Amino acid sequence: MAKTEEKNINLGQGTGRRKTAVARVYLREGNGKITINGRELEDYFKDPLCIYQVKQPLDVTDTLTKFDIVITVSGGGPSGQAGACRHGIARALVAENEANKPVLHENGFLTRDPRMVERKKYGQRGARRRFQFSKR
Image (cartoon, rainbow, N blue to C red; front, top):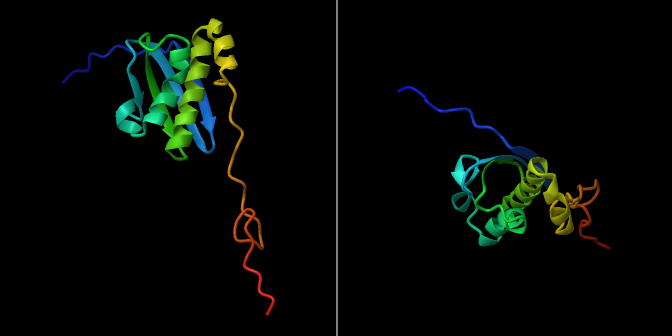
């Protein structure tokens, strides 16, 4: 079986981050197919809110059916991964066309969400939670 597959040309690429998730996003010419880690978007994210979040930058820039998007995401959970994908798609859209920047920035898609889990402190049960106090 011979491979007759031409090399895919990336029109734009971006890296998105959220919590501990990191997403590498590649824009290619196509008709709106979104692939995450080799699976379809609806197959990868079961939660409709995560699916909506991933598509937000495309909705705002009216490019839902203009590009095929290939995403490689790792780390974190579903919510963090969806946020990382959204951030990466927004960055890739800006790399492809600088005219998308004002509308994406206005909606907050280019801003990396800095909230992270606070580290556990020594002498405590968690980041803020103390061990139970016993007077006697």
